[in-house]
Structure formats: structure tokens, C-alpha cells
Amino acid sequence: MDPRKRIDTVLEAIQGNVQDELAALLGVEFILTDGEKKLTTKEEVFNNFVGKQICDKIDIVGDVEGAGGLFIGIKDAILLAGTLIMLPNSELEEFIGREEYSEEIENSYSEIVNIICSSFSSNFGEIFPKQCSFIKKDQEKIVP
Image (cartoon, rainbow, N blue to C red):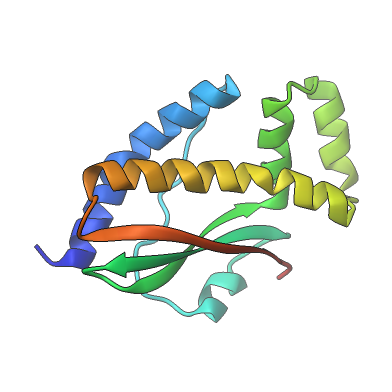
């Protein structure tokens, strides 16, 4: 099988494991949307965003070489992180509704992306350990 197709197949296979792992951690239902698995440019990806995003850059090394990223909207990251620290729903909704997040708050809530990325990396490594691996790089905020 083509290594790139194998990576796509592994990603599809681990999606359920990642969802279950994160749902257990957060204590709420967690559903990942299917991301596009295609070669694309940064411009094409960024043009489809609505609102601020957090991106964890990922290098793919081994049989297949490349770069990728895990993207999550800042509002979603705050919602997930607020759930993780058990903020009451009313307080969390009010906070998200303000849409005025300081740099410090955005940085602290970006930790949720690290958790999601780590779950993908560890699950991926269990199924596809030697031929290819994900290496997490830096994180950045993207404002479309």
C-alpha cells in the first residue's frame, strides 16, 4: 500500500480511539470532524478559517515525509479547556460570548491543543510505529 494512503487509513482507524480518550479525559462527549486528507497550500487552509485558530505544527518523518497541522478554533479550545477544569456552563458561555481574550488566556487555553495532538501522536505510534511518526513542532495562533 502507498505510504500516504496507509497514513490516511491509520488516521481514520485511530479517530475513534482519540475521541474516546479525550471524552474520558474531559468527562463529556467529544467528536472529531473528518479533516481533509489532501495535499494543500497554507493559503487554501487559512482562507477557510472563521475566527482565531490555534495550530500545532506536525512533521511527518519516515517512509513518508511532510508537514501537517492540527487546527482548533480558539473558542472551541476555551470551551474544551473550561470543561476540563469544570467551569460551570453559565460562566463558560458568558466568557466565550465576550470574545475578548487576552494573550495570556489564549496561551493558557492552547494547552488543550497539546492534549489533542499528544493523543493523536500516541495512538498513531501504536499502529504505525516504525515506518512513520509524527513529531510535534511549535504552536502558533492564526488570525484569518
